Length: 460
Image (tube, rainbow, N blue to C red):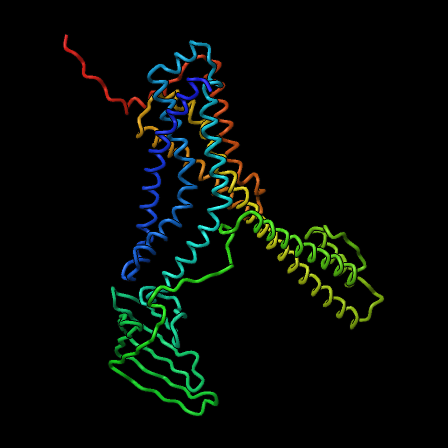
């Protein structure tokens, strides 16, 4: 490797490390501020907190690394252009494409590392983070009461509250469950909740207790109270760790998702066969397994019209066949809706598979965009590089989110949905590199002069 190539690689390493640390700190702080209510008052040990942070740090790394590459590229090429090092290299006969090669090698290495990270480490980290988050939420269930939602995980009781004023709950409904001798329902105007050792104490005010005898409903009792206390033993006031094999799409590795896709494809083949058999057995028409919704419903409509226009059928037979045709139409609509649901499932997994490669590949795309923009800006400051990186990354992420939404709705192929942002920005980067190469000079972005610290003028 030539000296200037090692030099350019070195120029990328420190800004990348600095940018990655700063981005991890910012994103992790933002995440913890949003999740802090899950920890407060639950007496979690430092080990559990550190594990929770470490597991959620996985997806933050996957998000921050491409952006750090963009910041490093803007800073490196901006500083070299500002110090006329790019001009010196060009004067020595080195092309911009050659100057760009070490940066592309750097981006490719980060890309490959991220692909390995996203396919091997991230799914398991996401899975464990979800399980731990659920375990934390179930610890101290008195902290998890939400207004307007049924609380069904308390032993022997379920409840719902309609209002809340600080620690005071209002309009409370409590019902007993898993009791074979009586059914109890409690209404209270207001109440508070507190944890005591391994139980929850409900302090209720101004309410009624309705008790119905089971299983024969042979007795009924109604009691009014001004104050009433209920002690609910809760075993999971201490954190209990669960194990689960159920995973969402972001918690699966590629073989798992491919298995889900094959399963959906098998179900789709079964439904298509059923559609073709229904039409051929209940109408005089025969359609292929790949028939569309429009063609299938059109065949049923023709059959309904034939029944209505037939003079050879008795009224009773005509009514019977018309009813059968209507049931067939409803069944076909349900089958095609089922096919659409299966296709959405396939698209969801395909989107996730492409995402595991598309986001790491953004490291290379950001090199193509960041290098010419850094040369044009000719500023190596961290603030300018971070600001410009944020702009590019917001555009990239907006395109990625929009593509994922369109793919989930079946309006765009999963490949195009996940790779459109890379293709678009790579095209922009190639155009910028070509313009710089052919014009044989560095462009200046004059609006960035507001970031430059002006030198004091000397009095004559």
